[in-house]
Length: 112
Image 1 (cartoon, rainbow, N blue to C red):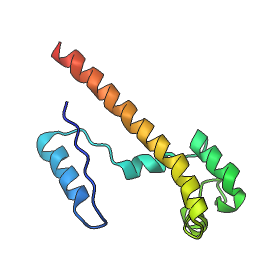
Image 2 (image 1 turned 90 degrees about the vertical axis):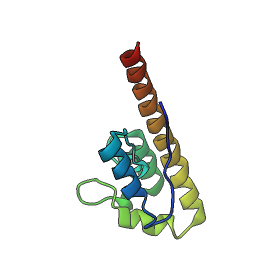
Image 3 (image 1 turned 180 degrees about the horizontal axis):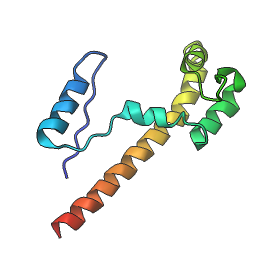
């Protein structure tokens, strides 16, 4: 299995390249931005950590994290940015590693 990471700035064409790899070559794709959003789902451990830290003021009326309210807090204070990164990054990395591990097992069983 070949693993490729695509990175670049806003508007650099990451999504175009990823879509091409997926559509034309059947590559399996994990979009880190989408994985990061999973961390905000109610009931998850990361949701609990975030809401415990920031309190109910970042929630909407349905109990979901309001990303605008959270961003206002996070980007106003480098310590808050460091906190949110310390929650989201390990979650995303763990999710990605787990998914790759699952795919490797599938590839191994396919080729044996």
